[in-house]
Length: 227
Image 1 (cartoon, rainbow, N blue to C red):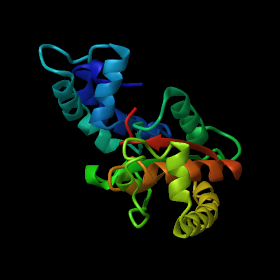
Image 2: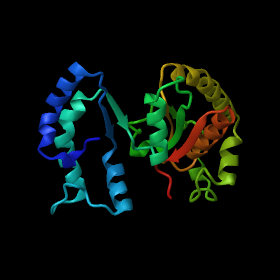
Image 3: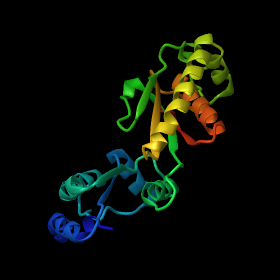
């Protein structure tokens, strides 16, 4: 395990790795995360950034990226940990690099988001659900989210909702075994509406329920929904 605290040794590491690979079968794995996630993690753990001097955490992260970039460039595998907790990351590493039977513990994240805030960069598949009637224009639902039973029932009540869910479920159940066969152990499926509050939230929750019922390890994430 190497991080930015190695100091001047970092400059020598790419050449050291090159030499080691000539002697031993070696795989370099680089763990990364989105800047906003890193800032949140430092805030939640109340730990200072190892490069912190007088600058902010954000500036320290920029400097850290610059120092680690040469190592990132020689890595064999890049893993974005933004949507993992520590337990999920451990399971992901074990399933991807562990010995024995081929990994069958594909972790699927059903992620809701609002297009007005941008498409998630880490989404493998994206479905646009803005074609559905918007609960935002129903005064009773405006300040609620798609996790509210009444809002969910409203969205679910349209024929096109059920048809869409059935077709996407069929597609996912077709695709997931092929992803497993190819060795993929983490898949992010995005559902986007305008603001990421109602339709996309309901869809992510429902797809999570359906895929979990089919035996997959699934979690629902809501990027833009108020906490």
